[in-house]
Amino acid sequence: MHDIGFAKHDHTACVSSAMDTVESYCSENKVQLTPARRRVLEILLEHHKAMGAYDILALLSAEGLGSQPPVVYRALDFLTKHGFVHKIEKLNAYLACMHPGRSHSPFFLICRACETVAETKMPSDDLLTAASALGFQIESTVIEAVGLCPGCLNEAKA
Amino acid sequence: MHDIGFAKHDHTACVSSAMDTVESYCSENKVQLTPARRRVLEILLEHHKAMGAYDILALLSAEGLGSQPPVVYRALDFLTKHGFVHKIEKLNAYLACMHPGRSHSPFFLICRACETVAETKMPSDDLLTAASALGFQIESTVIEAVGLCPGCLNEAKA
DNA sequence: CCCGATATGTTATAATATATCAACCCATGA
DNA sequence: TCATGGGTTGATATATTATAACATATCGGG
Ligand SMILES: [Zn+2]
Ligand SMILES: [Zn+2]
Ligand SMILES: [Zn+2]
Ligand SMILES: [Zn+2]
Image 1: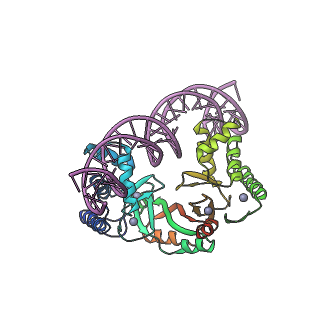
Image 2 (image 1 turned 30 degrees about the vertical axis):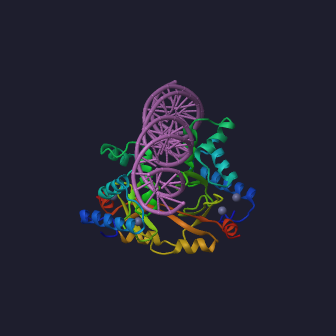
Image 3 (image 1 turned 90 degrees about the vertical axis):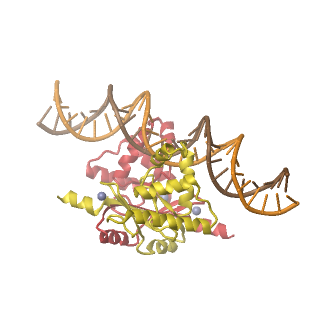
């Protein structure tokens, strides 16, 4: 499992490694990775893209894991609270974290053409510094960029 | 009109200066600042805070400027397209721009206690650099931080 | 005058998210 | 044993945010 998302990778390994990390975290921290929570995370990892809550719900529902919105929103609350999933505010969509377990300020690159979303990390602590200078204490950040990924950029030129 | 929002300022001057700038821009660029668009901008400037589309609509409606959602969403589309208003993704709310006319990557500081939102600017072009390194071409950014503003930070300590 | 571009009016609906309350499970300990 | 309480789930209803679709209006240029 590597950092960035516009390249091919061993997706099976990527999924199982993430699940392992999350399971360890849950047992260490005494929190429950219940069936619905686990399945939502798996779905997000398997699809490896940003998905809307209702898209996830449709899949859960087909598997008999619940058909009402609270089912998926509760699972997403849990997963985002513990950092296994991120919400992409610009898309109202959810994405499995690429570095679960480690605390980080993610930076998302959203391709407007193919809708791929890559997670990378903030290259500096400039935001913290700038906020501090104004007396503002940051607790969390939303950092997203919309544009064209390498692949779609090539197609656009061609 | 100054850059940041956790300080007192001459708000009357701030509003009229922004309106002047926007009017100049519109006549220069041959776009129409129609009554609904103008009033939505004024409302946002006067309140000087992030407002939901339906909050704005309620005010418009009371003034006889239209009572249906498309009225306010069309105005907001226009205003955001031209950079007079920003959407705060984290809040699904809208805020008048503090530097209309100039092209900029805004950085918003959102106080979770008093809900004040300050607009400042990105301190560096680190994001662009980081994205370029991955071959990604940024067209727009969403940069928001949630935390405590100086005032609420003091109250929290007290 | 007609046309095309831009903007508005109007109705309906889509898409996203939360509130509320009852029921359940299960570990803990009186 | 069995009350108790926290965490979780089931189920219904509703709130909030945003857009689709189509008709109408306005205004300038050809
Ligand atoms: Zn992450
Ligand atoms: Zn792409
Ligand atoms: Zn002001
Ligand atoms: Zn505050």
